[in-house]
Image (tube, rainbow, N blue to C red; front, side, top):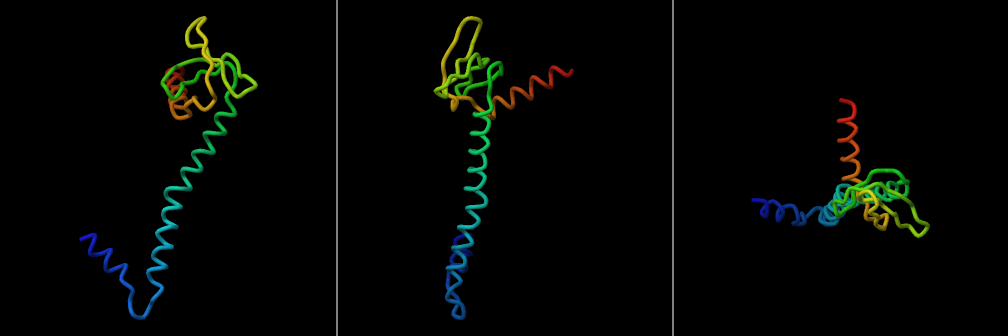
Length: 113
């Protein structure tokens, strides 16, 4: 049924030869507003989050490692403390914005109870 509907919509009516062109421009506009634009917005938020992290914050990496930032290095890396006396150096891009935000929300919720 869907194929038949698409065939009917893509056929050019005799009175309007530009219908298929307008239809394709509309499809590109829909793809931009529902796929490309939200992804660019998310990437911008991720970059802003990565630049704002500082020493002493609890984070979760993309690999699922829970740690505390010990030091922010000049070269864009972070020294994190995984457990007492155990340190690792990771890149800023390895910090997960979504998992860290969920962890902070969860810990704030348990701290207020």
